[in-house]
Length: 218
Image 1 (cartoon, rainbow, N blue to C red):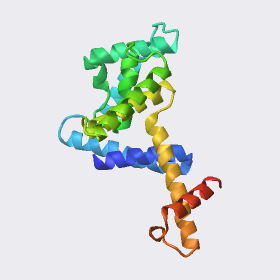
Image 2 (image 1 turned 90 degrees about the vertical axis):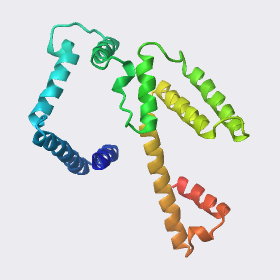
Image 3 (image 1 turned 45 degrees about the vertical axis):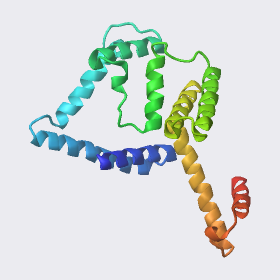
Image 4 (image 1 turned 90 degrees about the horizontal axis):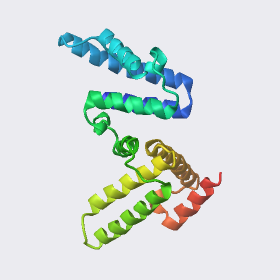
């Protein structure tokens, strides 16, 4: 499972970088994991790679009757409602389709997305801003000994994930981009420190902040 996750994230990186050669290579690595897992299942007498391909084909046909059948679904909202109705019949629970093994930030986003489809949601983004402010206040109270800091940090992150959703942003991808931006800038100040003949650990926070502002402007 470790390698499957690693290869999946490497595919995401390749997509974000927009490098077709790298994407081709990473998709091949991910496909190897799919074939490998299907082969293990085949050896156990459970299913094979052909069964996997047939299962996804059958699922697509069943979930898209407006494409493969004669059902009329006029809007994107109609398509989503049909999709959710179909999945609920399969899973028996609206949230069963959200993998608990997903990265936590993505899981929070998907939970909010699913519950919003049945109307369990804030009407406007401003309502989520207020929820974020409320969770920040409760976190400060927890830091003063009035509750669990871990729980309040979790509540705050959950609220931020839902704020991202209301703003039309996937928080997992947004954080990935922020991480990459930070990495690139931090590597620049490391190189700048080296150029000056210094090591970062020997520099004051004030010096590092000055270099940080310099590389932000480049």
